Each structure stands twice: as structure tokens, then as C-alpha cells.
Image (cartoon, rainbow, N blue to C red; front, side):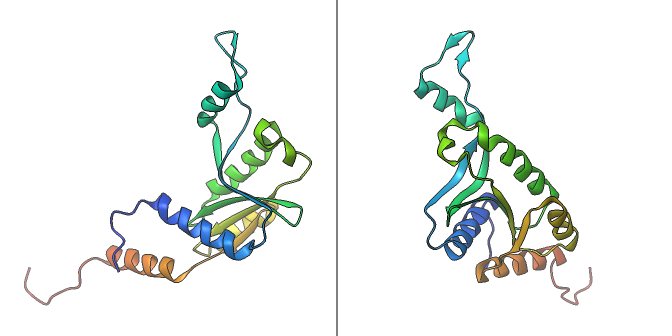
Length: 164
């Protein structure tokens, strides 16, 4: 099964959605692509109405998901391949959460950062542990097929035995 032409972001969004559904089947609230950070209050010294402030929020950072489940708030980043950058993103997002007006009702909750990846990486796992980030490997069958396809492509064509 070839996966050419499918952007990485779509695969990660699918993986994230499947993981959230499996891990938090009774979540009270799920926000995918949650905008985080303060909204601008004015533009060139002129106060902005709420609707325009929200529109300008598209320039804010986005967490892959915020999940409220069992009274606990989970801050989630997802990647096919684990990367240290995702841990840094989780740290920044946790700092921005209290500044996010649209999520004021979640302010009293301490976010629990989670990095979900399809690949095991012992160095990233140790780094996560040191930062208080839960590291989860989630590898549904379609991701397994995608990774096998990628590995086959990296190996290149099979030698035919014909002279070059």
C-alpha cells in the first residue's frame, strides 16, 4: 500500500484522533489544534473588538490537542517520528495556556503533557521522563504499513541482476 502524496500532517492528525478516541473514550472536552496564547488587544493603538481579536489569534501557536478527562487536562503533541522539538513545544504550550482567554475555564488545571509517537526512541523517552512529559508509542496497523513502505523506499529498487 503506497502512501505517496499524503502530507505528513494528515497522517499525524489521523493518528492523533485515533489515539485520543482510544485513550480518552469518555473525555468531557477535546480541542484539536487548540490556539494558545494571548490575543492582541489593540492594533496601532486602537482597541480591537472581540471578533477581530479572535481572527488575529490564527497567528498564535497551536497544540495538537487539549483533552479534559476525569477532571484532568492533557496537553498532547503527536508525531510519526519522536522529536525533541515536540517536547519543547509542549513546554511552551503549557506556559501559554494560562494566557489563553478562550480557555479561561481551564486555568485552574495543571496540564499533563503527553508526546504520542509511532516510533520508539529511547533518548527521547529519557528526555521526556526528565521533563515530566509522558511518552506514548501508538502504532496502528496503517502506520505500520506506512513505515514499512517508507523503509522500502529508502532501500531503493531491488537489484535485477542485469548489467548496469
